[in-house]
View 1 (cartoon, one colour):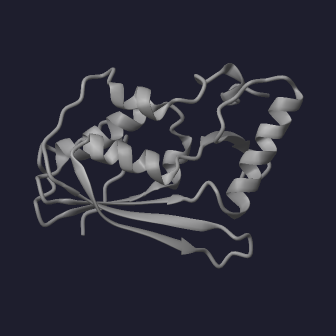
View 2: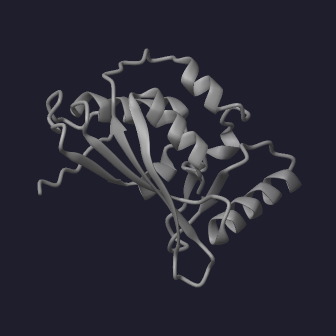
View 3: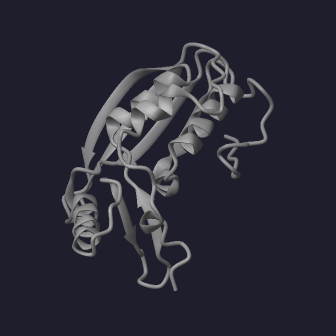
Length: 178
């Protein structure tokens, strides 16, 4: 099985490189760092570009409403509100090692489905799986099948519908924090 690493918005594979019986398996913990809906659209559009109709797209994301992820989001929200800083609802700023900090946006199941369906995929299966990590975390697994070739314009109504939350603020981007 070929494994590829690269920029999700420009994978580098030829158009329709993934055949109708093929699959793209995205271990999506890294999409938590994609805080702009326009970039998420580019990612899903790129998946559409490189796959033929019938190809599968397999995605997993953390359930933002369970366990450690829910607590992390709520804690970040409370800190920002206490400081009088308006931020988007599912944004968090954290560190896996207390040294390297990052901004994350926790997409929910409805948003992932909307991105996929807006990019020519239909939902085949959605499964919620508790993680045995002691925190009450849960993963959401999706299997989509490409059913249409779709190319969305750069600025599309799809992202406007998904982001009915406040625009990203400087407070959401801590990448420049000391």
